[in-house]
Each structure stands twice: as structure tokens, then as C-alpha cells.
Image (tube, rainbow, N blue to C red; front, side):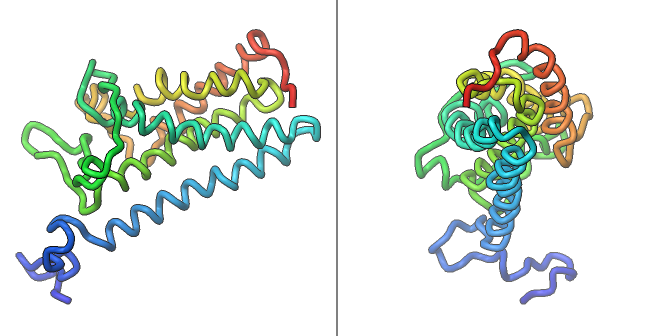
Length: 225
């Protein structure tokens, strides 16, 4: 392997693989990105599914566990149909991206881009893995954000109401925070940086949880399963 410390020398892992793969694709970068995303996903399923089902009264256990499981599954569907583009796509307004699909092998196999790296003087960063990996990586964070919020609603919301709440909150709350900071939106342009999801995930889930814990008992009947 070439010495990465020598000026101008590229490690052999980043060299062309003989034409069978794109020049920009690195197997190690792609494998680690997917591994990291999977570890985050496991915090949700089975992690929080088991936790939520075990910390409430017995009569609410199934409802609470399935709130987490449903959120994980529903966010994935919404994410590829419209929410990813709203979070990381072309700008619609300074806090929101344009909705759109992100499936199809040509789209998925294209090189990923990181919108919150581009400034007037610096071009947008393009990591050494495909867009499919980026979509998967960002999906697990969107999903766990909804599941964290669900912790404020255990024993307070029935499952039918939660089924409606998840895609609405993802669309009208999470995507705004994600685009504003990670999608190159207005907050990023103002110099706000969120490296680990403190604003996009934890702050939004916390504020959403406090708000929902107040309003949901008023607007929604108690759990039915």
C-alpha cells in the first residue's frame, strides 16, 4: 500500500480497480458508512422496540413496541418517495428542499454528495460511496428521531393516530431541520454546523416530544392495543 503521508500520493485502496467499478468508489469507505448506519438502525430495531415494550404497563406493551417498529418502516417508505429530496435535494425555499423520488438503479449508483460542505470558495464534497449508501445512512437517523419522539407518547396515543402522525411529522418538521442544516439550507449558510445530530435529531425530537405530550391526550384517545 502506498504511504498516505507522502505528499501527492494516493493510497492504493483509492485507485481505479481495473474498470469494473467507478473510479470514485472505495469499498472501505462504503462498507464503513453502511456499518455505521446499521449500528444506528439497531438502536431502533430491535433496541427501542424492546425498550418501549418493556417500560410501560402490560396492556400497553404491544402498542408501544409497534409504535417504534412502525415508525422505522414507515419512515423508510416516506424517505425514498419524497422526504430525502426534501432534506437533501434542490432548494424549494431556504428551509426546505423539493420533494421527489430517489429510487432507480441509475440514481442509487451515482456518487453521493454532501450539500452542507459547499461555500462560495469551496466546492461540494463528494464522498467515495454511492447515493444509495447516503440515503440509507440518513434514513436511520430520520427513523430514530421519530422513535425518540415516540417515547413521549407511550401510553398516550393509539396506534391509528400514530400511523398518521409519523409521515406528517417527518414531512413538516424533520425535513425542515435536516435541509436547513445538513442540506445546505439557511442555517448552514448562516454558519450553524451540526456534526452529530444535536439539532436535527435530538433537539427536534425533544421539542416535538414535549409538545406532543401536552397536546396528544387532548386530541387523541388512549391506546387501544
